[in-house]
Length: 256
Image (tube, rainbow, N blue to C red; front, side):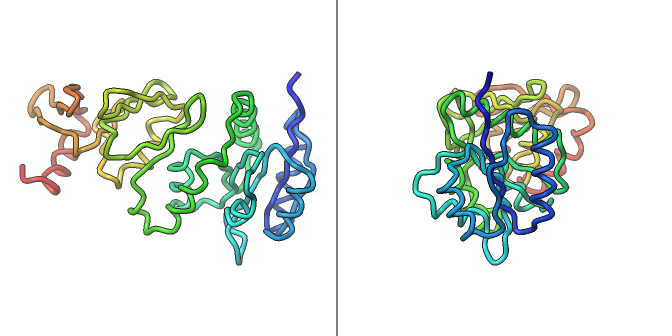
């Protein structure tokens, strides 16, 4: 039997603490809520006292942000699941950083899914706190300044420069990320999620199964069987539905 997961909720609104606490109690077997706090200062003392396994942390806690709490803890021993109202900019930042998150209003299935990931990481002795510096840096920029994404791997996280991604390929609900050095990573996120992250970073979804880095196109094949040849010599088809739109996009950024 899996050990009980001790949870702490840090949220500036008590009603949101009550909602998530109720979900944990009623629907999340093997999870015990051991404390909650409504401010960064209160939370710091609580975390030191109860030593939780997982922290549910609100990103926006005026006048503070959630990761200010993490900066106060020298060596966190807990996983972090961020809580946020749907705000595209913050959500993209969380995805870039490979961190777990819950969107308000919080749904039972999403809480259970996030906790399953916590159990999986803890079984491999991996904590989700490692990429938080990338989240902080991204939120400090205008949204175009961050050039790296965080990829979870078996023994931790790899930091990948976006310019080194040749293309992303859909593998059912997973995504294969092909790199310039010939290696690849298979990640448990859908291609749609990577499209949302990278579409304003020079990447284009040319086919339901492929998201390409336009900088790595070395040849464009037009007409019937339209395709692009990438820098790794991979021939990637352009879907008929995307063809005209994609060529219009290329004309806007290249002299073709």
